[in-house]
Image 1 (cartoon, rainbow, N blue to C red):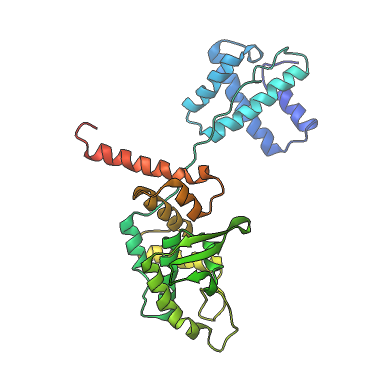
Image 2: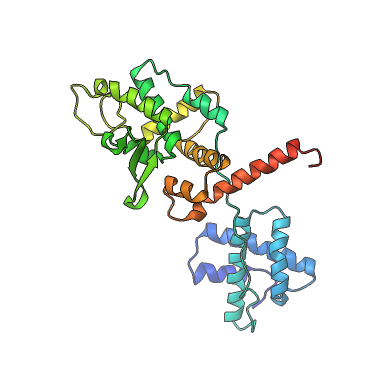
Length: 294
């Protein structure tokens, strides 16, 4: 077998493993990078050592590949060297301890406090549906609920006198979330006219209903918040942006991570920790902007 090019390995993948044409094309592109790297090292591909292949990962990053793309390329490289080992062309697999880079976790998009205020002020609360929408947005920002959790709320899930609601989250796990005074006030106003939306129609226990008196769906709420984001000059936003804003603003104002985790309904605190990256980044930006020696 020759290792002057990856075609022998690719033929094996096509015939023995039955990989698709698209997958084979991706493997070919990734392995071509390995051959280019070996040439720069002045070595044959089969002569590359573990230390060389660790440098190969850095070489890919220097060429502008994202961590996910580097990890995919290393999958192809590992497969190639295992193939050489299996065929007796190598005695030791140089990729045995080769680690893939962990993809960077993208930071969630969130709104500033000023943008949140503009969004919450957009619905026309003098109309029935506008009042409903105002109450929905206030509750969403006050609690950080997921859109699916919001539309599943029943009127009986609220305790407005004590200022909290009970929600059934992922995995059917129930949690109690505080409901701020402003959200309580607007929810009371909405409840006062809710019967006008459901009057003479099929009764429903759902808290938020359509103008036909039926439970509001997640897709319908999604369209509502997108429209208010555009009307408020904020741009195209999703319900999750308010959830991200809720968590970010709490941490920025001194809330502890464990409490935010409980309110968001995260089973693992590492999921909540992404918001500390946001607040740390904001601190760095403020430092660079205002410190005279930044």
